[in-house]
Image (cartoon, rainbow over all chains, first blue to last red; front, top):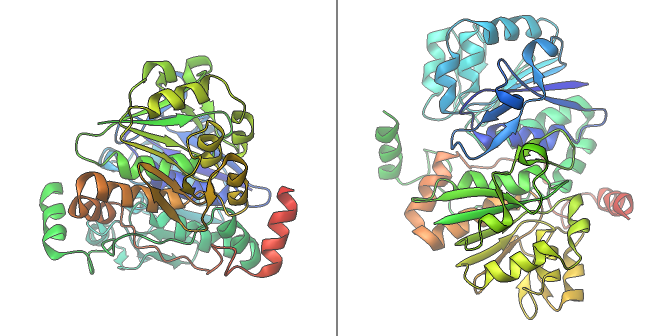
Length: 210
Length: 210
């Protein structure tokens, strides 16, 4: 079971690593980090420029993954034009079992034409943009629509991947993975969603990104 | 504010990236991935061998970090003998503001002599081992004892880092980071702790690791 996690410059680290940590524990999982244009030594940099990850494969090396994972991040904006990544996504999606995204990765899937007519989610500040691509934005943490699985912002990729692990390998395997990563979250604040964070913080983050 | 995240061969990816995603958002944060012996091109491999990360610095390049983060992982077992990592930890700890760990990273801190007489936690399967090093094992998700902050398994590094962010920069900054990573966890199962996971699963994981 090949799982291709797409990397591009200025991806958000946890978007990719949350699902990676979960899905790589699936029985028979063969996870590959793949990039359109791996840099020197195949290195790709995250949004902070401090996490430098080696993409082992070019997208063209992995034409038929069973599971596709597209992370988000500030670099998503550079991945919205039709081009090799979109072409790869459309092609790989024809035979994938699951096509998934975290955070603004869903905007890339949508821009590639894969979410038209689908229910989907994204980062809370970006979810409304899905309308532009014919998708129906849903403010939920994980959205399944057929084989398309989209997650909300950054950390939600962990929840998405666990839910996906359950579909792929059964509840017991997914529960074992959850126990293996001791995923018993206890956030010290209740500020992780725009519904419950202080309103002025929500406004501040919106204006900062504008 | 320099934050040194220690890497070593076969670290667990999310142990390092959870705190990285949170702490790199602190105002003035300068995060450095540092390894004792960076391999060719400074590359360090995680436990799965699929995530290859570039350690920008040798430990000796960052002698005085403000915050130290030590992840866990299967490779922790190779880091228990006294040697350059322990010597660096003891030295850097003399001037650090916070010395922290995720998962079995606390066993490395303990083996280096830094947790004697301290309350500390670790991965649920490893927490009892802290006794050997004179620490008091605590089955909590995040444990503060003075400047020493230890987290339970893998995913708990996110909670630890948010709690630490609150101490370092105040609740409002920490809440903004939580909202920024949309950390509103909704695990699809309630199996993330040995207290609540099915007992046979807990036993199965214990026997697998034995």
